[in-house]
Length: 382
Image (cartoon, rainbow, N blue to C red; front, side, top):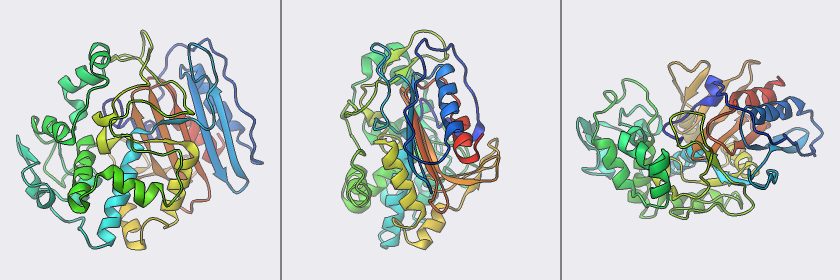
């Protein structure tokens, strides 16, 4: 989940510029023995570019390194914490996909099941037809289903200033979000192309509930969060706050990257549902993706399915699997993970295929900063 769609800033290395904040970038001491100076420099550059603050944690053969830059509160200039919790947006998708693949491994569903089997009559309207779309196509974004967060009314209600300030605490049900997408035509015939659609994962969350009788939040909690002891991670449902320790989150609430900055920390995350509802911290995210890539959460067959990627047009050296991004960096290092954007929060979590080197970080602003530069700095040292 991003402000409207997945930004994919880490793979396209798009730099959004804005005026630098007056706050001075301050980095925390590095406890690890490795040299993360390039990463620190890239974090400071993001702050100079306009991001209020950055928090990051990396883990490699030398141990764990954590650092911050900038501020967590523009009013008080309080720095960010390396223990900050934050909204992770579309990183939620990897958790949802993992649960569905666990269910497949248990024989409770098949990736080739039609969506109609589990959600009869839900995907219908304006050419959409769940009878011709598989669960796999939801997870790898080849379903052609319209992205509800691109709907103009939804954008005005939840992403632009007047609508957001009025509706930030409203609850949206998964069925309501899917219904928005059904008012539009599909993007393409299922299986013929690729397009990122948050609607796919709202539907995936609904499938989890149909298969298990439990919400996707409950299944993620008892299948992933508790077994991995992810103490900072939660699926908040309709709860509007980010638990402490945390920083404030900031957005422009506009189509431009200029103009006033608003505190958007509090919101009802049901507008993102299974597409981007979760909250976590950098250490937990590193633990999750390391466990996933090392086969602790999925049998080999399902992990292979998750890592079977589709080339994404216009994004060099990247592929999209089942809720998992594969990215080849400029130095030849291959990393796996996801990024996520939601109001006031841009997050990235990546690890090498062997799980030996992981990085997770967060910008507490959604209009500026080069996340790709931070990734390149950590894994390639530049």
